[in-house]
Length: 193
Ligand SMILES: [Zn+2]
Image 1 (spheres, rainbow, N blue to C red):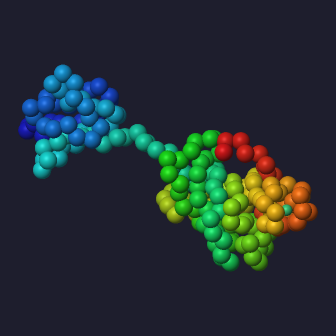
Image 2 (image 1 turned 90 degrees about the vertical axis):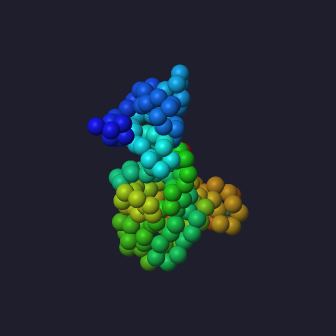
Image 3 (image 1 turned 45 degrees about the vertical axis):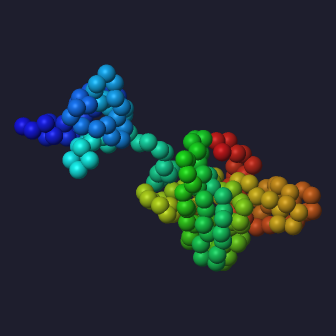
């Protein structure tokens, strides 16, 4: 068996020796220690023959990403008649994602009630709690649970923080403006955000 076949695909944990530095160059997720190339992360070794490097493909999740069935927080960046775009920033357990993910809220997933106009559900700048429906971006979101919906919104007239009036209305304490939304029963509770 050749040396490459021997190394390639081998399962390693941090600190495991992969080979000596005379054999290959250290690649991604490796480090050099006392003349040996060692694994810096749990994963499987791969050999790149063209660059003569060895690296480790991580088996652990490096970054948290939204998951199907998971609950997330995001802010509304665009609202159209049929759908809204929501930037997902964290999950509801307090894990902030390394970058934001694009979420799509279709009007059919916006409420249990019949919705004529998505502007009655969310508006740009609102912070929402949503559930993820699929495994890859763009993430399809739903607000169809009592805990889901807008959890923080500001008055369209004076910019004050709105307070919850009912499941579908918010009121401005400063100018008494009333606005429609799909309001979460957790409105105002920003735990984990
Ligand atoms: Zn106001």
